[in-house]
Length: 393
Ligand SMILES: Cc1cc2nc3c(=O)[nH]c(=O)nc-3n(C[C@H](O)[C@H](O)[C@H](O)COP(=O)(O)OP(=O)(O)OC[C@H]3O[C@@H](n4cnc5c(N)ncnc54)[C@H](O)[C@@H]3O)c2cc1C
Image (cartoon, protein in one colour):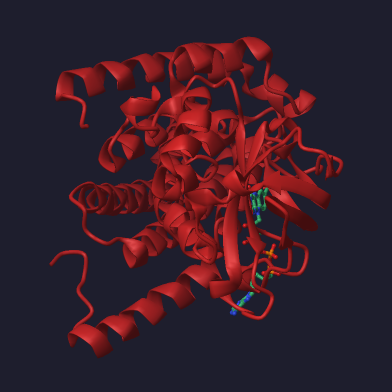
């Protein structure tokens, strides 16, 4: 159910204060210590951030997609590692259940995810199945009244602290592609689950990522999401539609923050006896960044409005993610340039954010994969509908 405008604005104001009073001041320490302080996580729980998109029936806030992107944009005016704390509960970790779970599965997990009592992760990628996710080989073999899971999942966000995993595994080895894959909701305390060491990433310090290894891990039949085999890959792709749009909004929020940093520096820093912002070559960088952000953000909001109205958004979500992730990369690069040497040292916010934003062009589908998806959809639409509608239709 949509919030009324006043309630939404109050929520965004509260989040903006949280960003400026609590998160931004902690950014440098989080970067050096590679850890988000517990009191900040508690603050996020108190604000209800873990349950933003979980339906109210399961104790979440039940935000529409249009509202969700506003929240994502606002919160990512701080380093994206903060969003990562609750991000998987809000997007890829919970939405498989929201979309395809049985009532019992939803009642068991969603209220606790919404309260932030359990952290949910999404385990799709494998060492040999990244962009080609449908080739995954993690096996879920029927045995007695349940399944035995074997396989390795790579680069799983929040896995080091996860209480539950949405795991995509192959239930039918005869079917090589998507049809043989099912989705499971797996309690992280189950026997037969081992975690790899946390990865030492180049950016987004404080966000935790590791491998998850399933070795004869027994899960009950009730762990099969929706109770039907063979639906897992489609569930994962639907989860990623909303996830990609959410990520696109976070790219825009970060770009807006980075532009502010660049603008302040352009006004403060003096060379040749005047602020560097007086020089037209610096002005061009500011203007390009502002224009690119505003265009991408307008597009993301439009797609979110369409999703909220129930329109199919698979192609548009890929376009939004591709557009916004490439945009924030260029914006961050220009901001470093405007900062000069100061932009290359970690004590400067734009230097840290430059490293942070690099991930966006890689995860939840690289830019190359988004382009393939977009073109494939365009061709299918032309064949089936005789047209490939633009977003402006
Ligand atoms: C920090 C981090 C967090 C992550 N979190 C999660 C998570 O929570 N859950 C999860 O399941 N996964 C997660 N991932 C995995 C992520 O989604 C994958 O890394 C990503 O999809 C790319 O897969 P890959 O790394 O195997 O790259 P590859 O698939 O090996 O791609 C390598 C390069 O080849 C290109 N390429 C591949 N195929 C084609 C093609 N057909 N045409 C053109 N170019 C192609 C790619 O675009 C890329 O440039 C995370 C990754 C990172 C780094």
